[in-house]
Length: 185
Image (cartoon, rainbow, N blue to C red; front, side, top):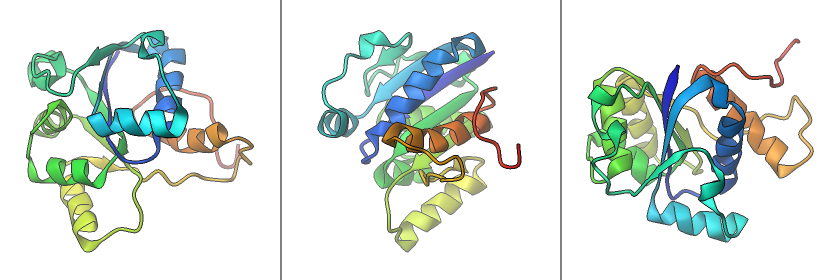
């Protein structure tokens, strides 16, 4: 059974995080625990891009960004997957260099050191060589870089449908069983 960390960092793309949380709530039979942590900029971007939110509507445990007593701040808690969605280039850089300044980067560090699944949903564009090298470093350390590049095969109609093409791929990478568009099916 999945024990999952969802981190929402300050990159634009709060719609991806919202669709991810909504889909995880609908997949509640497939996880034991979901811990969520947001950066300060993630909260600001959510309000700017999507409006006010009541996170109490979600069946998850929410943690403050500096709560190093959160269970997933330690490998002994055995959270098996972490998704950072969206993942800012600043968060990517801190993960790539092992700079654990908050709960997001500490949890990512734990995932890498414990050889568990870390999925970074990067959203920024264009990319500098620094960004690309940081992606390479995280990949070499065992993380997965999954850019928030939507697909159009399924003919998405709404912005949420478009975001779901990315989120469904992320949930596939995280090992969830879900019904989504499959090429050739």
